Structures are given as structure tokens and as C-alpha cells.
Image 1: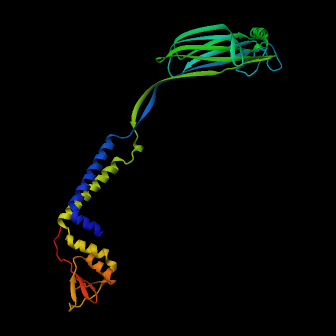
Image 2: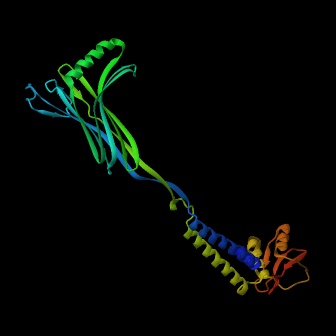
Image 3: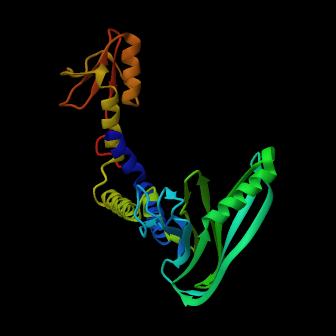
Length: 333
């Protein structure tokens, strides 16, 4: 505390100036961070649209079986008996939230032969094509003679032999314009044939459209020190600077007195309180500073005695009396 008092008594205006400059810096930083927050880019997806192409299937039993009566309609079944030979499949293209400006959908029966995952032969049999405009959905139904498909599949498998694997699927392809977008979506529904049954997969596929829009937004959580905290720090520094300056002008103590107190505190371990008798015939040596007197005490392995009544600091030795007298009421800056 004495060191701070000494510093302020000696350099009060300079300390106030430094604090004032720091306050201005804090206020400037607060203003800059408030008007220039950290930002990040956010991408919005506008005009989002989805076009979904899905299959459904059904078949009607035409002969009584142990499982089904004639006339029973099987919808999206896993297993369809041969007694329901006509497979009705519908490919439907639907929009999520807007109408198609135009749409064309083609359904094709596709035979293909593959080997090691590579297709080396394909035959496409067109089934139907439909076109519409200003519609939310377009359904394209087809009727498939599964017995005829079974026969053709057997013929193609016999012709390919061991060279590959022959399969058949219903393929739907839809081309459309939707809310300013142009797109195509395709899906395949494989047909599987075994002894007395067959099945038809009913998969679906979707295509999404959107328009990205990038915008810059502030990220308050990324600020190391928020503007209010910087502003508060600036206010504290400004008030402290004003207080230091006011104290220095109105209440500053004598610099010499503060220095004496500082030295007394520093060498307190070497100073003892006591009563020094009046000067005798011993030689009296006046020293310039308390620090010098403490050095004398250290050299003679003695102690400094402080007489509070007279204010003298004395080191007594057989040969001489070493004395330091503080400069009372000094006005030294």
C-alpha cells in the first residue's frame, strides 16, 4: 500500500493519463465489438420441393385355391399364386407441396441379363405412357400378363444358359417441371417367379429440389469479451483515473514523508523502538538516509533504535553515535 501511495504521490498525473488512455481503449473496443460482431454464414433452403415416384400392386384370384376364393383381390402381397395371373401395377408420381406444371410418365417392362454385376443384354417392352399438366399427382396403371412374362423369361434364360442371370422388372420413368425446377425420377419394381407363385416389389424413389440462399448472421456466443463488459471496464478505468487525479491535487501527502514511511516499513526488522539519551561527548555522525543508517547497523552487527519522542533513528557504538533525523514537513516532490 505504501508503494502505491508513493507511486501516486510522485506520478499521479501520469498514472491518471495511462488509466484514461486504457478507458478510451476499452470504450473503443466495446463500440467496435458491438458494431462488428463475429459472424457465420448460414445457408437457407428456399422453395423446397419433393417429387416421389412409388409403385403399388394388386392381383385378383380367378380360381378357387386352398388359400383364396375366386375374386379375392390381393394388394401389395409378398406372395401371389398363379391363380391370380393378371398383375395390376400403378406407378404414381406425386408432389409434396406444389402442382406439377407438366409431367410425362413412361412404364416399361425390362428384361436384362447380367454377369458379374455387369448387364450385357437388355430388352425393353413399352407398356404405357401418360402426360398431364397442373396436377399434384399422376398415376399410371398397367396390367401385366404374368403367365406370358413367365414364358418369355424362361425362353430368355434358356437362350442365355450359363452365361449369366436373366431377370425382369417393371421400370417407371417420370420427367416433370415443378415450381421452376425440371427433373427426372426413375424406379424399378423387380418381378420374381417361382413354381406356383410370384411376387412384385413395390419400391419408391424421391428427388428433392431447393434453392440455396446464403446469409451472414452474428454469433454472440463467439465473443471473447461482450461489449457490456468492455464498456463497464472502461467506466471503471475512467472513474479510477478521475479519482487518482483528484486525490493527487487535493490530498497528496508529502513525498518525503511517504518515502520515510516506505523506508521505515522496508527496514522494520532492523529497527527497535527506544529512548535515546541526550547527546553526550560521544562523536555524533549524521547519516543522510535511513537506508544508510541500516547499512551501518548491519556492518557493526547492531540495531537501529527509534526514539519516537525526538524522531531520531540512532545506532549506538562504543566509538560513535550514528544518527538519522527525518526531514520533517518536507515539501519535496
